[in-house]
Amino acid sequence: MAARSRIFIDTNVWFSAFYSSPYAERIIRAHIEGKIQAIISKQVLDELVRNISAKIPHAVIPLKNLLEATPPLIVADPQGVPQKLGPMVQSKDQSIMASAVRSKVTIFVTGNTKDFAQQKLKDVYGILVLTPKEAVKRLKL
Image 1 (tube, rainbow, N blue to C red):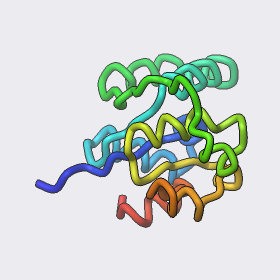
Image 2: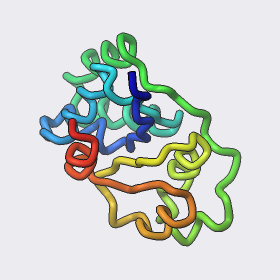
Image 3: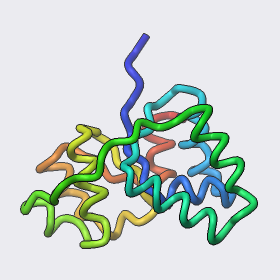
Image 4: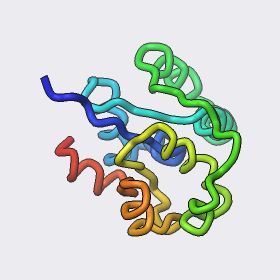
């Protein structure tokens, strides 16, 4: 059996899955079905729980159930951000991308690709920054 792709999934993708975004839903469904290994940081988890609680409170229980039944791999938040990463990522996303770099993923899925210097991240770290739609197509989900 082929190894599952290790995919770092940004907060907005998880959140969008609960807002019925079809491509975000397919990414999370692939995680639930074991087709990919979803990876997040503690910061992503905290943001997700906070945003779901504040904006779609009826989704708190389904989120809790999902996280308990099929938890993503949660990596520690970085102690710092590599200096060369700074110019490639908007400041609000630097620690999340630093977690992705540390977890050695090759795909980072986000709804906010404009916040990332995609070609530089690919060239320097080997990480493709993809929208959920692009990830679904690339991974054939």
